[in-house]
Image (tube, rainbow, N blue to C red; front, side):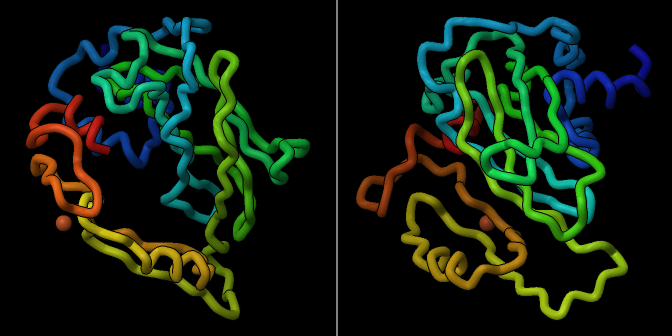
Length: 224
Ligand SMILES: [Fe+2]
């Protein structure tokens, strides 16, 4: 495969955004990542909800925002309880939370190489605009997420309220500041640090991380 075909192949593999491509490409150590190019499971025996980790969005600009989910019916097991095959996922983004005004949609493959995670990058959205998004796979439908694009580059908003947060340890914190942050309704949030650390779980904290010190990709996925 020509190196210049990699972005296209990776996009097909996991709906990977251009913004994330360089980060992933830098960490690629083997070509088998591409081995499932073109083949997806359209139906499989997912007896549990694959959207246990919900949905998320971030990294907006004035015409796009990254939409994320990860299929993991059993997120605390290696492989997330998913088959070791690509799984087809349908995504849609709409102007209303009942999805009567869908503005974009598509089908992508969630692959085991990326932990069946997806990073969808819709294009040509309206600036400074609220949107709703969701994913579907087999008979399951994800929770609906709400997201927003940035104002146009030449816009001059009357005000722009943003919050900054940095390193925190999920095992230790009560995170009450987030309640206030949500109440303050910022236009966007800069998150600059960690959510988790690699250390083994310690009893007696607010909550206890599962497992020993994380060393493998599977362990990190479970920790997240
Ligand atoms: Fe940190």
